[in-house]
Length: 304
Ligand code: GLN
Image 1: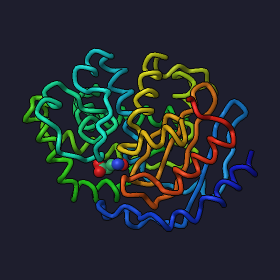
Image 2: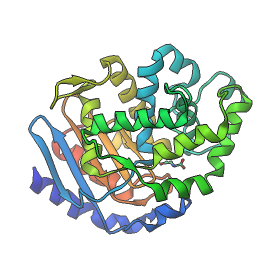
Image 3: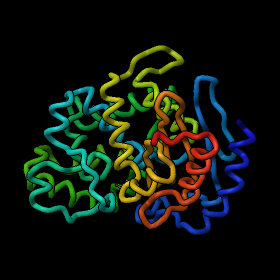
Image 4: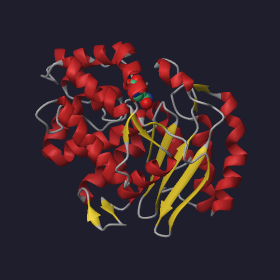
């Protein structure tokens, strides 16, 4: 397996040159586009190759974890009354939702607006506590108590994240959030700034592939229904407006982030974590998507 992973990395590595590291969050521009790592976790254990220990921030890969915690804390009905499940076909930070889409709550949880709205559903006395509970769930899923905030990325996004503030004010204007906008987006910025490596992502994905159970400890972290819900949403919308193409070429429920990470959930089989920070125009890792595709083809992982 290690040889296969190494081969896939060497075959897809050059594609990074076709992409660009995200720079709209200034701190992300410091990422080294020459780094690339991959890890898979399955019943046999972990297998990795390349720069699998290189750390990066989760960015949008945290969205399924936010969705899970909102489901765990408030249940399906509360979540469904705030967010929808239809793919938007728009960029992750788009503003151009119709009045109807907003009023009828068709805001997908895998794009910024939906994830920001869901932060309000997380239990906690205040937004620091909500974030701590989210970090704790990410730690449990990754089986890594060391996961922590990348302070520099967090402060960089907080200083420049006015588009997300604007999206949050739009939600407030439509009555979808009640709390103080700055506190809500602060929690979202922190969530995006949780630092992981490819192994952490693969482990988080593995819990989702195992219907909510951490197979190492046997602990059930969330219900099978929630895992099914999240995996289905990942299939239709996890790669933003590249999700349809990804479903055809790769066929694995997955989530990408502008930090360069992609996590793939192969139901009942494995979790995959890939890192390569040069992104395509939609914000997905160029080499990462191709590596995921190669892995899916070689191991026949497509769910379709
Ligand atoms: N923190 C990023 C943002 O909100 C996350 C977006 C992403 O990874 N696509 O802009």
